[in-house]
Image (cartoon, rainbow, N blue to C red; front, side, top):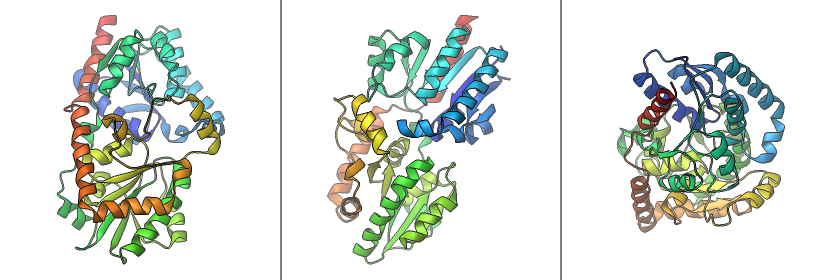
Length: 381
C-alpha cells in the first residue's frame, strides 16, 4: 500500500480529518498520509501543506485568494501525480476539493468524500459532478443519504463526528471556576468564527450586543471568546479595546468555555452544532460580503428555511437566527437577555438540542468512515 492523500481546508475539516487519520492508522498500521490540513491533522500524522492560508468563506472572498489557492492546488496536484496513493479522501471544502477530484479521476485514483458539500442547501447541480467524480460518499446527516442515492452515488451514512468530538467532562460549576467566573454572574461566549473575514464582520457586532447586555444586567456578566486556531489574539484584542467591553480570550478550552456559559452568540457554521451538542443556549449570526450574499441568493435552495445547522437538522427553528441585514446588536442582545432571564426559553431550546443529538446518531463516525475507506482500497486491489 502506498498510502492515502487527504485534503481538509478549514478548521472543522481539520478536526474531522485528524479523527479520521487516527482511525485509519488503527486499521492500517504503518499507513502514510499526505495532502493538506491544519495543525490537528498534522499532529495526527499528515505530511503536507498547512491549510490555514487557503481557508475562506464567500464567493467574493475566494477571488481575493485565487493566486494562493492556485499555487497550493498545483503543488498538491504534482504531489498526487508523483506519489499515486491508493485513494484520495476529500473533507468538505467543496470548491477546492471537487476540482481536485477531477485530477484524481484523471489519474485513475479512487475518490472518497467525507463531510458532504451542502448540495441540499445551495448549488444542487454539484451533485451531478459528484456522481461523476466520487467513488464513495460518506455523509454525516441522515437526510443526505437519500439525496445521493437518488442521484446514483455510492453513499453511506456514517453519523456525525461531532457526536464524539463535542464533549466536555467538566461540570458547569467546575467549568465556571476554571473560567474565573464568580457566582451570581452570567457567562456569555462570543464565537465570531474561524476565518479572519468572519471575525472582521461579526465580532464588532457581537461586542456592541455585549455592551448592551452588560448594561441591562448591571455589569453582572463575564464575556469569553474561545478563539479559533487560525485567529490571532491581536486581531481580537483590537476590536475588544475599541468596544470598551471586557472580554477574555480563551485558548485551547473551547468546550469548557461553552459548558461554563449561560448563553452564546455564535457565527453560523460547525460551531453552532458543537454549541448545541454541549447544551449551551445560543443565537446564530451570519454575515458575508454583499456581493457574496447576492450571488448566494441566486444559488441557494429556495426550500431551505434556515441557515443554522441545528435548525436544519431539527427541521424547525430551535435557535434564533440573525442573518445579513438582520444583524442588529439590539436584537441580538435582546435574544441573549431573554435566554438568560427566561427559563421557559432555555428549556424549549435545550429540549430541541436533545432531538438534534438523537438525529445525529450514536457516535463512531470516524471509525465507520475509516472502515469504508479501507474496504474501498481493498476492493480495488
